[in-house]
Image 1 (cartoon, rainbow, N blue to C red):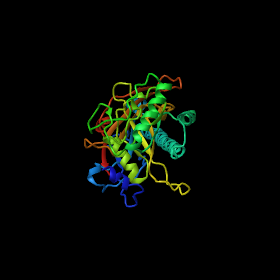
Image 2: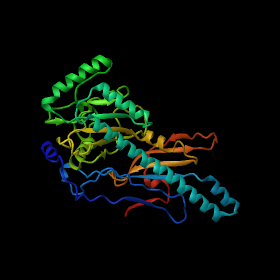
Image 3: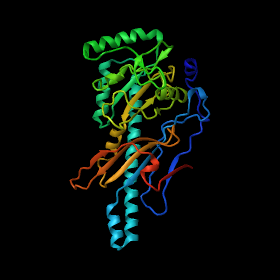
Image 4: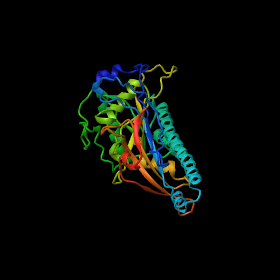
Length: 357
């Protein structure tokens, strides 16, 4: 398998066939409809060899169900029902469009941030202090994420020196960190990080900021197994950024349905730098709750917002990523957010159905 990844460097994906987008339809007796959006960061090979598992796209849908209380009141009064319903449809469409645009804008910001990290680090001629400076520039621009990372392709011959350098750094600047060397989930369904077994090469999270709060992810090998490994392979084969499936992040401290994804970026093939490409990865760790907060906190209408991943249908249905109740009824100009428990897309609203088109 490792030889196949090496041969995939610079692979041509011109014949890739994008998966059909997922759309939502609503029953004729309801105007609280779902709004869908495709956020496409990578083309995928639907005909990829089975050894890599299912092909991975990054299409996501955003399902928005607005709470339209005063439309119900108008119906009870029996006055201007048709007009009010149309007004509420228009209001829904405006609010849904705003939120969808905010989410799409956020994904683009994450993608650009990962590209910036890769561009700065691709020569591997930088210090950890300089990586910290880059992180501070990113957060100064208002981008909210769990961690920024650079994940170099390190061969087994380079492993010992890389681990020694990291051990010395953490002992000096973060003495409370229990550095264990390269670690990973050794099997597909493992939930325990273990010292990484011997392999030809690794993609560890060797540079990361911030350190505090992300200690569990230090030198985690993304190529070890599971969705992380499949995303590395996608980046290497296509030369395009890609998202993991839904993850329970190793650094997540909140209980409940708090999920995240990792956006990995292989950089771009620069004519001015004829080095081997793709080789290393930059990555941004995104907590879905942070994404939702950024996208909805300035909305003027109360609403329920859910995000589902339409490319991750392991159970035959789109995978829940997160949900939030936006409450603006207090009139103070600041929305109150309450994160919602996991729910299947079918159960978000009684009239919603999904189909490929």
